[in-house]
Length: 165
Image (tube, rainbow, N blue to C red):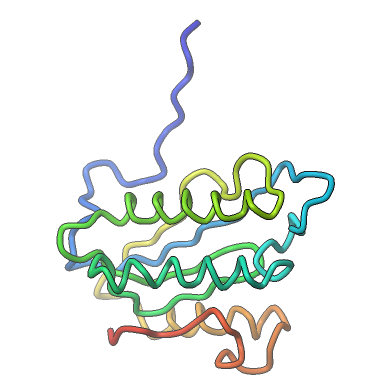
């Protein structure tokens, strides 16, 4: 039986290792199954297990310390991640985010997740010169404020601007 291949969300022919671009990406959680004794809330895995949230945050920043990403802004929310980043040193953004998703999924298995943690692929927007990068950064950082989780973004433990734009 022939399997139907899904279309890619990525732009055909675009080089996602091109460091001259900044990418605004969103990765959504989509949990279908957890063990009966799971410690994870499927609607908010990173805040239901703050240690998992911290591990997911640290894992993202690991790619920065390895010289694979410049991270201009990021915010790990209870059920998704926003990031404005640029790949470095020939690293491919799709590959990096895929590795990140895989690693954090394996961490979540230790808390009772069964199967996948993340929705297939990620949503991205390639910033052009006409895009207002500062508006994108403000959107990313103010996500926990807008959600009513904190009163100012600096109080949210998993967001920041590690690299200058």
